[in-house]
Length: 298
Image 1 (spheres, rainbow, N blue to C red):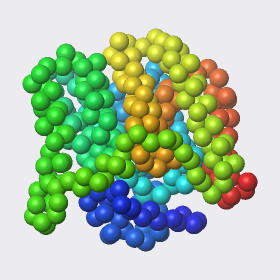
Image 2 (image 1 turned 90 degrees about the horizontal axis):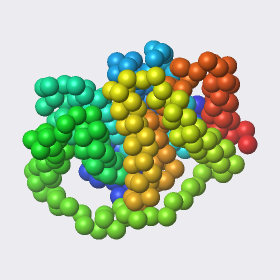
Image 3 (image 1 turned 180 degrees about the horizontal axis):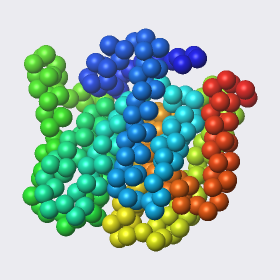
Image 4 (image 1 turned 120 degrees about the vertical axis):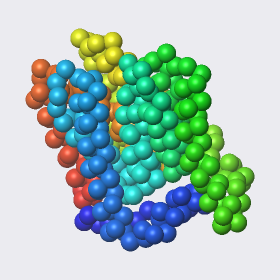
């Protein structure tokens, strides 16, 4: 809010992004919308955290860490496509988890597909998460062929609506030259302060490694249902890495996709830890890095 920055669409952005950023060109407006979105996303994460019973303790740590991880890289604090798409990804995760032990899961399965398809329309690398959705549903329930069709139909609906819009406005259905910009890229990072970027990415990497090493503690004393839902977050991390390597995009921006599983996993660790002071210190350290990046202290 102190120095608002506007996100501007480029040649790789699709019609949906063009419509969004054409109508929100003001840096202040984009910053306000981004802050509201992050707040709503934190509420959704906390709802998933408590409603799905993936932790023995019911706390708000997951939402807090999500906000911190999103804010860790200063350049990502804009109304970017991945930030907007994260909202739909969170709702998709919620619907996927709702299918567990649900004998009438047609609606959440279709909704999960529709939300994943919408997220992929806004942020193309999330197209890879369609496979994640299929794997996740297969992990949580005896996934039938009929349910697979329901999911894939849900994924296709946003694209059908987009093609209908293009047809109505006499626009080409597919811009084939775009595909040259999407796949197989070498990761690279650029920021105003490379020192602060290294610290932020290093901290995010440490927390990621901690979550991987701490897997046994995170899943201990949990029900089978809770363990399966926690495993979905590790699969989510894997797909974040795969889409990071497989799609040509702003790799710094793509780090925001990791905030969802990291917020939940670190939130579980913080909620159930007997050493709450350690996580409070991590919390303070993350806030310090965020403020140092915002005010360009280094």
